[in-house]
Image (cartoon, rainbow, N blue to C red; front, side):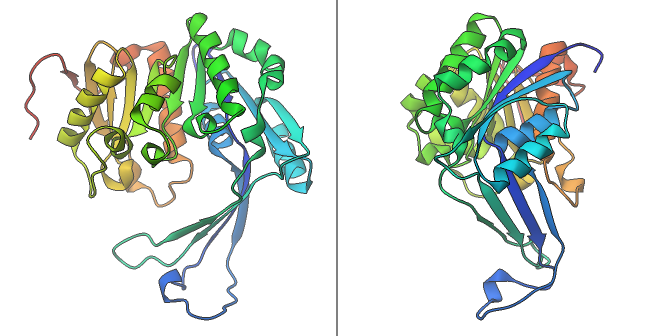
Length: 315
């Protein structure tokens, strides 16, 4: 980190409880079963996970979130104290802290196995309101970028809180990044709603599959660079003058396409296919990409550049 950069993050923080069952297939389970396997706990949630990844790239990482007034909330706040993240975390007595149970079953030789995720429907971060934003004002006033997950735009009052933060940062000349999660966001928002909610954004982060859900319709199977370029062309007309940080290929994370507001682009491999443990990988890639945008622009990527304003032939 040769340049002093500050990023602000608004998003949920969870306590993740994770286990992998090396000898059990969830599809074959027909009766009660006790299994002994390693169980891990970690700081999770889109806001928490991205903030942890951003620490590797940014000098200052600021996080606005909320947890419940319970033991899980105590654990989460203790975990945050062990990091360099500057936090404004409200304790909400009305909604319990969110615990997420993640269970991986046995790989079958074709896939890495099935993942079962169990969690509560609501998170304390759904209740972030303007009073929380006032406490976070100094953090927003000094950052060069703001990161907002799509989850925070799905319900009130956190939606209005995030929109106010985005407008404030945009008026300051900051980069405002919106990550289009969950990946079925197109089933929860219409295209016109997406356009309205991202009006103050300068960077869109998304899987190509998600963008297609808003435009041409969800495509099954593994997408290639030609698919990604077609998707970026569609979305550039609908959400113009923005950076696009797109992922596609194996696991919807194996390849990237970066498109600048001027239409200069580059594509390559993320390294996803070479990893045995992909925990937090997407967040690390996004943090790196945001850092490159702020420090070097499109020239920060070593891959050959594509001019999307001209015709190009991709096999």
